[in-house]
Length: 64
Image (tube, rainbow, N blue to C red; front, top):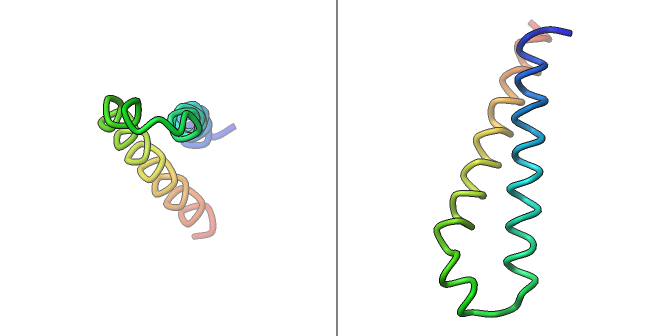
């Protein structure tokens, strides 16, 4: 397995964890909890976006 693919797999697993945490925050439907965890939620979103961009770049480089 290519080193880039291994790293992408690790990052994707972390992004899945972040997404799961974010979904849990939203499912609380508690504005107070969401307010307290706003930075965590935003961080999770940023992490997911970053990983998806890296995966896109990896896939594009494989096709070259």
